[in-house]
Length: 174
Image 1: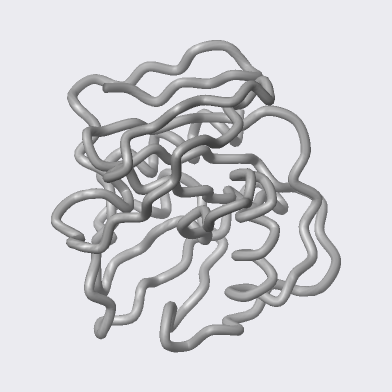
Image 2: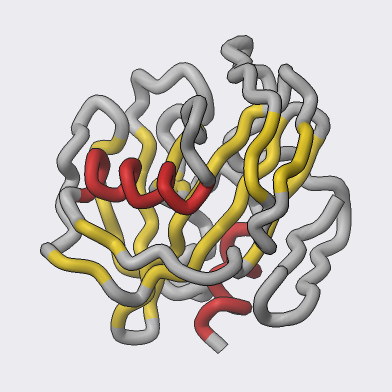
């Protein structure tokens, strides 16, 4: 699997995507259809997590959230803000909701995702978000315990939910 972009050309990273939000999480969301990045209905397996994530950009850096150590999936590591797509939501709508819940911002999530990650148990669409109302803050301390504006170089040595996050940041910041 690879990072794929619908709007800015393909981006490919070596190796299978082990998952930013996938992995051993036993909670599976059941959704029969959702809209792909062109707005077409797509049928997905009932055991696939549909995830929407945002890469908020400001001043040559992207926002990384630190997942709380008490989280079941990927505890105590850096990640992108976002979350699971609920029944009846599009991925873009889910991201708007998640950014409001997690960061207390009203974000403009428009156009096609910048990147897409797929694995056997999840599909994650990633949007670049550079317009929002409000100042990002940790509005859900049970989910995250810290926020940081970083570039790909500053991420070196951090424990991340996925080792390919620096490459995604680098591609977005070009």
